[in-house]
Amino acid sequence: DIKMLIVGDLELSVKSYVASYNCIQITGAYKGIKEMYQLVERNNVLCFLFPSLWPETFSYLIRELSGTNLPIMCFDLGAQAEFISSYGSGYIVSNNPKDIIRTFEKAIKDEE
Image 1: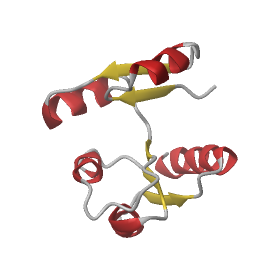
Image 2: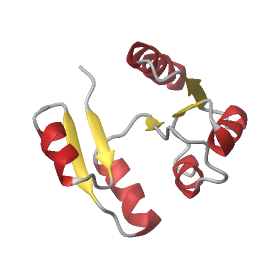
Image 3: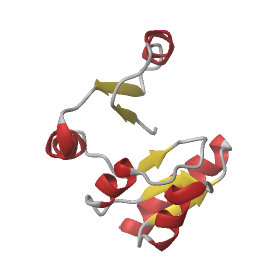
Image 4: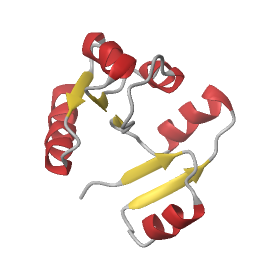
């Protein structure tokens, strides 16, 4: 019953694959933080997953997402994990889909 919104764009081959799932919507590229916040609000986003597989040295996107005060999940890598561990609604998850879903459900419950 979980719907996923991909805020941004994907490579064409990945986009074609993702389009086959009715529970996933892709917004396409957005222009600036204000438009991203509008997409989040318009689509009733409840939680974010920052699925970077590489340790970042700094993540502008994580900082922008934190401005929504919504829960953010990320993997235990680099600066994104460092920031999320101190963010009030931050969750460090493994890259196991079951763990991600369990944490998503916990994050939503914690926000209620």
